[in-house]
Image (cartoon, rainbow, N blue to C red; front, side, top):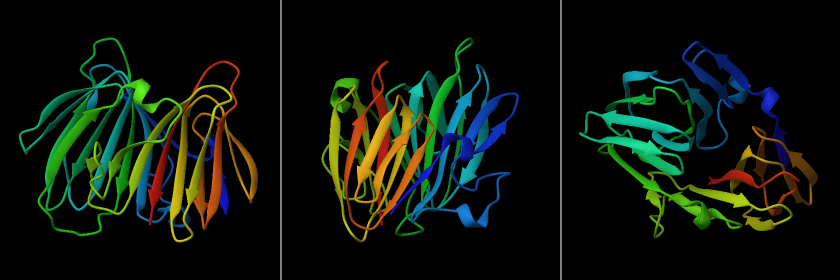
Length: 239
């Protein structure tokens, strides 16, 4: 079963210093019928203005994944980690027993766009940890590149949940095949470009900001159909 959630269906939070689109209940958006998709609790598309940020605040028992789409995001936490995260970088923070962190835009002129994904951990109360890794565009080209996994797959960042996050940049008319298992969920989010997804349920077209939530077994085909450039997407395999 495929459910497409369009960009327009997301909840918009537009403040002077940050513009956010929430795919699930978050902050001032409370919808009990749209609280999560399996272990996926949040998928926020944020654009932070120059010199602005989210000052130090706490988290616990969350797996927080951040993907910087454009610009630079500055991370600091009370574990002693400090990093300017460039576009193309994925950050993972396992909040565990508790961590305080801040996220700011160090630029004086450019916005930073970043996706933030929250997963429910499979085991609560673990020691908090942080890591980040840059993934060059050529590694993501016309493939599903695993960048985060619960199994500790080689080359990926580790999370405390049985989930895998893939990045892909598809050239026009290129397609991928993904065989979803019967007992798993798949969440696809289109960052940019135009794409088409299809399986036995039918064929669906995605625009930037659109997402697809897929349940039950599905031999999925993902194709870039834009005439003006590539399509970039995230695919998350979930319990």
